[in-house]
Length: 477
Image (cartoon, rainbow, N blue to C red):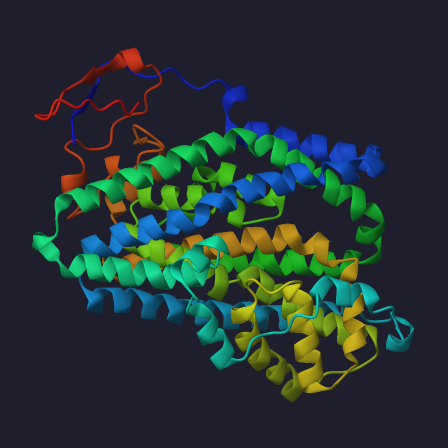
């Protein structure tokens, strides 16, 4: 790859050009529109939905390219298996802690106490519409679902676990060729990854508009009335999430040396956009890129992040266990220690199969209520008005948990470049091209670039461009 030298220091970006500021303004305008014009806000839903669909359009090819390039450079099936096993071990531990915290807060705060709801009076038709007759898959069904009918079907339906499986097989097969593999194939894959990130960059110009539409619709439909009715439950959920995040951040800092608060600042645009749209999938491409630039090996990022979206839903775990306590208390049922332990055991399994199930939280709660038999399943309909209010808590906690898991697994495997991590999080090193992941190779990946990361650049004329022996020119700016 050709060499790029920096000939001028960039000017500081103006505040109004910051994506974080633009998304923040979009969210503020969305909240104001939802409160002042609730009827009009119904028509703004396509703005948020359209933005998320644009992002989902590139998620499957992005995961494929990131995983293949990462695995091909790891080159060892044993190392790959260790990364996956340690990721799943961390996911299981985090899920157990999140579920336990939800049950603990439910016992202490008693958010449903005194409601005295009669389940027979509840209308469950809206619940049936929400779940669309879905159910939590069993163990065999879940494993079989990971195997795609065809490779094209996996990409067409955006099934992340199916894409993940094919990507791992492709990467391992490519790595097995070792030095005998034609370098042109890796070059094509690397450059394709660069193109996908550039497409993501184009889509992100619409992020403020997407955040505005999604927030206006949410506030207009689930505004102050719902918040007042379920205030204690909402406060308990957000309080439990805050405790979980603080404890998780402390543990991860002790294990890896990463400063979680600096990481949140580093990814503030992504976190704010996830909160505004109510979807962590909307920021998956940029989070993958940010973690790669922050010193996590690409193989670890490619495996942990997509897998975590199905297996490491910490925010959802807190909500599910707390919601079970709320429902039992609301209908006047006192759950004993054994029943709460059974709830945790069931949710540990059911929370892992939630991805892709319509109304997954309601399906998981209904299945758990039916399994323990302590209160009628119809009671789950109580949460129809409060569920949307929990989205911000779930999205932020899920995203933060997956990012921290990536740092832990990378450090565990010795694939975390801590010097690079500190430099990037401290702001002393800025990627020279935020869309160009191949410009920042990890140890052992030096063939992807000829120069280390440099300060950011704004103007193409500030570049000195060298030609390769073939006569091509690097235009990355």
